[in-house]
Amino acid sequence: MLEILGTIGANVISLPGILGLALGMMTRRVWLGALMGGIVGVLATFVFAHGSFAAVDTFELLVAIGIGLCAGSVGSAIRIKGATV
Amino acid sequence: MADSPEKRGWIGRIWNWIWTPAVAFSSGFLILAGFLAGILFWGGFHWTLELTNTEEFCTSCHTMETNLGEYRETIHYNNHSGVRAICSDCHVPHEWNHKIKAKIMAVKDVYHELAGTISTPEKYEEHRLSMATAVWKKMKASDSRECRNCHNFDYMDFTLQETRAASEHQRAIDENMTCIDCHQGIAHSLPPGYQERYQEVTETLASKAQGSLQQQAAADGDDIKSFLSTRAD
Image (tube, rainbow over all chains, first blue to last red; front, side):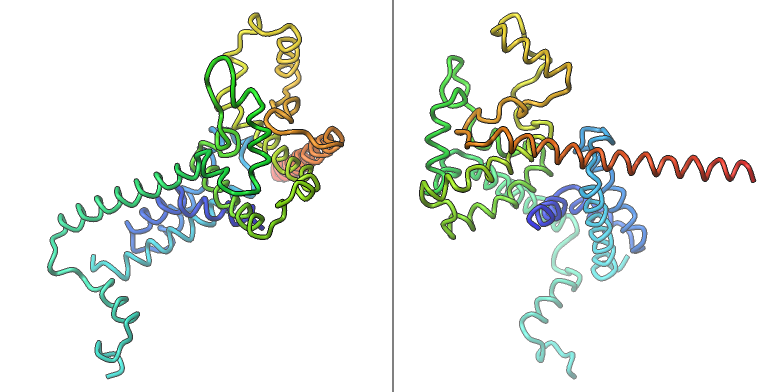
């Protein structure tokens, strides 16, 4: 349980959460925001595994993608709600 | 007029204020103010995080006194080179993602301090093996990542090491071993039965790795089968 919470929290204030949110805020298309966030999740996990797919933990990858998708979607929602352009 | 500003509660008014376009501030002002606020927030956050990495912070709890006493007898505390590895050097990863995960998981230490799980020497000894096992698992799974922040086989001059150390390090390289495979008690006393428990840890992790390899091989086999059947069609 603690492992899951730790992984989620780490991703929320790491690249998938922050960059995913920022990229999501660049578009009004929620699917595009989510997609960009998800891609950041994949790339971030790869970067933190020192560029080795063998060192990528499946659970961490899935959590990072999930957080990226959510952050990207929230970013797009913020754009829709908070901007007129 | 249920939607009128007068009838809204304070949460509703704040919500409305957040999403109303700013008319009193230019975009440049908002960008600069946001940038400065971001720097202040991030600097403060990072500084606070670094404070939780100090030895004083780690050992400020009563339950950490035993660990501290043991660690002070080891080479990581006092040595000829004058380089010291403190608690966070071995227990907190450097990379951001892993560091935040470790910090969040460390909340359990606060809980156990309050609950008094290891508040007496007897309780401490009772839990020593399970605490050590948790750390060994992490270190084995991460290929002793925290050890390798300072130690690296590539930088070792085996000719300067004792013969036994040099040959064991060479064996570690040849057999793809990791630091914790041999150095389990490098900073804290070892509990009785540690060798058997460490063996269990390595076997559990190896079987997990084997399982995922088999799954991958099976998936690859399915891919090949589907490719061949497509080609045959």
